Length: 142
Image 1 (tube, helix red, strand yellow):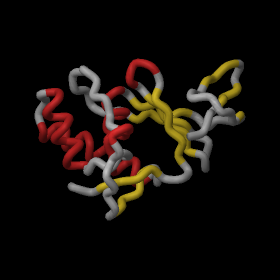
Image 2: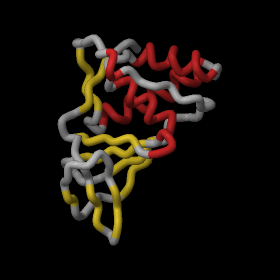
Image 3: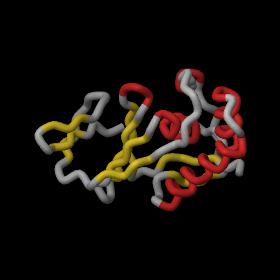
Image 4: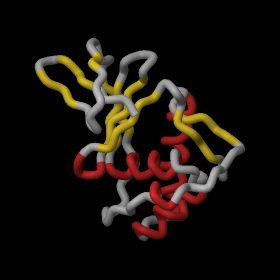
């Protein structure tokens, strides 16, 4: 379990408040919300951290059982790979200092990626966030 992953080209992802995030599948229009732990796992994985390193890091910062974390992380990774959101790669580029991840002070909770119905209207913009109002979904790409 030491694979390294990159984010698929058909996925757009944004952090939200309170450590959560949202992901949009640009092929289907379906969007997904990620809880704090899933957001941290996604952030680690898409910044060239191996899945084994993610498990070790989560165990270190949370003090939770490494075997439980490994099961949860593997389940999340397998699901995201099956959906085509993460792509396994042999390349492990060095993460630039400017993109290092800030580790939140949160207790360990199982990572949850929740699927929501497909977005019917997407309006692209240039801001740093996504929003929904009046039934329209506004998504600002990466």
